[in-house]
Image (cartoon, rainbow, N blue to C red):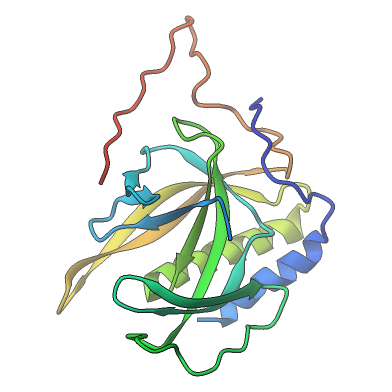
Length: 212
């Protein structure tokens, strides 16, 4: 059993969350690190763009899904308005000066690393691209279906993968995939740490890390 406390809020109305997550099918200040996929298909986090260890598992907080709008300037966020899925989309006015694409619709959620060197680290993933939003939609609707089937295990455990397609102008474009490998309770029941000693008492070999 892992000693990582997964998420607080186990007494929240899970059914209401399930209904809110279903809306994703119809929708096209924090200490958390920002998690994203770079243009080469690598998952990275933080200001230093540290690459995520391959094969690590992440627990998705089912109560963290948000939607809203973001305005980007030249490499920086000019404004962002987000709200929980249980609430209506936030209202926005005229995009701020310098917004290159105006207001863009954005979906996001938070997740926590379960194992590896970053075990316990919380991250936020947000997406405005078609592929990114589709990945969040797919994950959200899978969680909604799970909650309707078994409210006691609403936490999706995912591995971070990628897919790609060939764009006529931009070449190979990578898209994120959140591959569900297990379901947990809100307090983490059922988590098995990949860092636990293997049979024979040998410690598992640490994976190499690099900064992207």
